[in-house]
Amino acid sequence: MLVALPAAVAVGLLVLAVESSWAPMRELDQSIADALHRQALGHPAWVRAMKLVSAVGSPTVMRVGIGALAVVLWLRGARRLALWAAVTMAGGALIDVVLKAAVGRARPVFAHPVATAPGGSFPSGHAFTATLASGVALLTVLPLLGRRGRVAAWSVAVLVPLVVGYSRLALGVHWTSDVVGGWLLGVGLLAGTTAAFETWRRERRPAPVHPAIEGAAPEETERAVGHGDGESTAAE
Image (tube, rainbow, N blue to C red; front, top):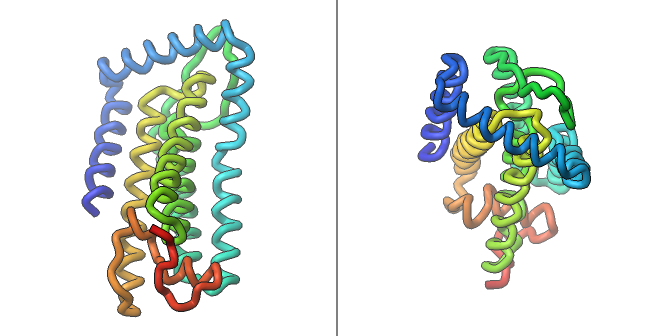
C-alpha cells in the first residue's frame, strides 16, 4: 500500500485539476498536444507507426493476452495467481469505464485530425491497461528469471506502457494528463491488488516474498511450468 495510496492521491488530484480546468495543467496539455499534432501532420510514416503501436497496445489486446495467461495458469494449477491476474484486469476495465463516465472530459480537437477515438478522454484506457497488463505479466514471470532476466523484464514492463501512452499523445486522441493519469491508475491498482493477493497467499503460510523481485507468487508460477517443489530455479 506504500505505492497504491500515493498513486490514488495523485489520481485524485489530477481529477480535481481536470474538473476545475486548472489553468497551468490545461495550458501544458494544450501546448504538448499542439506540438505533437504539428509533428504528426508532417510525418505520415510516424503516424502509421503510432497507429500500429496503439492497435497492438489496445485495451482489448492487453486484456485478451492476460486473460489467456490466466487460463493457462488456472489449467496448470496456479489458480490463485490466475484469479489475481483476472481480477486485476477486470477491476481495471471497470474503473476505466466508471472514471471516464464520471469525469466526462472531451478529447483534443484539431481541424485536421490524424486519428480519432470514441468516449471520454480521462484516463487513457490504453496507458492504464498497458500498465496493468505489463505489471501482471512481469510479476508472473519474475520467479523464472535470473538477475539479468529480471532487469530485462522490468525494462520491457516499463517501456511498453510508456510507448503505448506516447502513441496516444502522438495521435492527438488524449491529453498528456490523461496518459499520466492512466499510468498512475495502473501502478496504483496493480500495487493494491498485489498487496491484497500477498495477504491471501499468506493464508497458506508460504514464505513472504518481495513481489518486485521475486514475483507475486513464486510457488504458483513454478507449479505452472512444472517445478512443483516451490523452490526458485532461476539461475543467478
